[in-house]
Image 1 (cartoon, protein in one colour):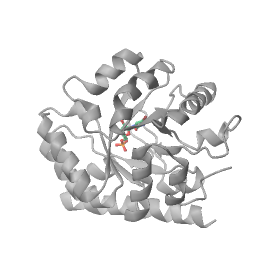
Image 2 (image 1 turned 90 degrees about the horizontal axis):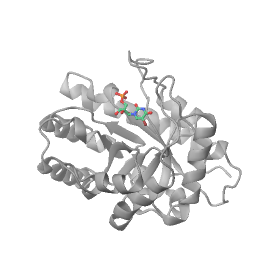
Image 3 (image 1 turned 135 degrees about the vertical axis):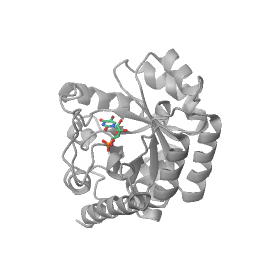
Length: 273
Ligand code: 5BU
């Protein structure tokens, strides 16, 4: 049966992943289902945006490989802020290789993602080995993984049977307590509910959220927080340029609060039904 009508807190017992439990608890505590995507190329700017939005969000999403002046002190500071301001860190790495390779990409290299990012994501395209590989690194550190079951961009190929297979893959690994949800545009596991256990719950994190524009010039498509949370039953709204894209620094904070409030209102309406 659908868990969409339950509060985030009431869904904690259905999860065995530590990062998922922590996330669900802090969402109700801070009254936010907003994840801010901070896609900027300078360390100082990244940290400045995070300081401005940290109180309004449950999660900060990074693309750490776009940072030009990267050093380990950046992620040390980010982790410190995540503890002070209480948000989770999600490196949107979109792993997509064989298990052995992704285990190295996750643990090693310049960025050592597993050492600082609570959550990351992976394409299911290589098969189950991608979960085994990432889990061998992330599970001992209490990290969590999302599978990309759908995408927000125009013409993407993650649809229909592909999405169904992504859901099946997550189900096969549910007991291991590492995969706890999907990047998707709707509650894909409830759409493909054959074979679902009664106590199954997955979190749905959704990019492509904007209040003022419908898309960009490169295929991005936006929906409102209400469409995403209330109409489609997703759990977390991911907002990038709608927040960090403001030129005035004070405005960044105002926009974060605006998205937080819209997302929360939609969640309250959904769980009241
Ligand atoms: P935007 O500025 O709100 O459009 O940024 C969206 C972010 O979410 C950006 O970091 C993308 O890489 C990310 N994203 C996305 O937009 N669509 C997807 O399907 C996935 C990730 Br998966």
